[in-house]
Length: 231
Image (cartoon, rainbow, N blue to C red; front, top):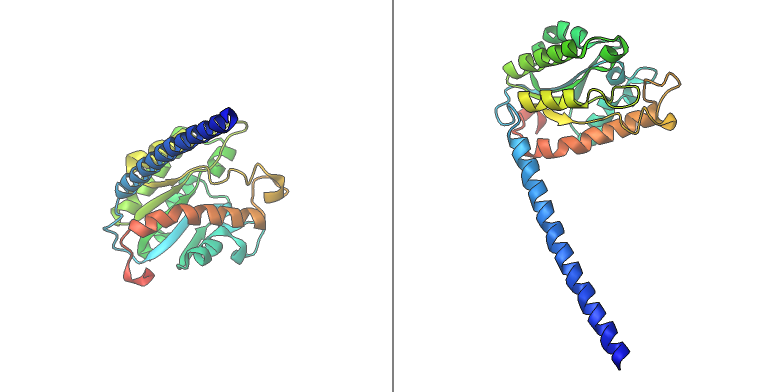
């Protein structure tokens, strides 16, 4: 009889702990959701975009180096989101190159949203981080001046640690850009997801990259005021 009582008491205590855990977990989820909502609402031009297109300004990873154009993440992202996306990736581009062709390749195309995926070649060419940051800020400033939303892809750059993580975070916070951090994590550091040159995703890597960006963009797209061309 005593054993039954002890077992019953233990079950009650476990149930009580579970209820407490569920309450704490629910509170954390609510706080997290409210935090994400607040962050999204702070994005520049989220409800005031006047353009018509989604474009991606990037380098060889965006261009789909070594692969067919339909295997590059912009094409895959378009399919996953069921939205037209224009690929403006150019192999070898640094942030300075992206800034130099920004007007012709992006600003003249009536951008509603521009995804910026640059920085990798700055690292490879040992461009000072201060200059990389300056160029990215100039790119974002000009895009936002056209009443477009800027999405910044945080590239994992560094030999042993992500030396640029804070840089992308700082730029995003101070410019009102939507940051998708460390998009290459689990891709370039995994031989199964990259090409033999180590610095470019293979077809599987591009698929993973597209999925990461798609999942991260869904909350933003849900809150943004889409142009008629994208509805």
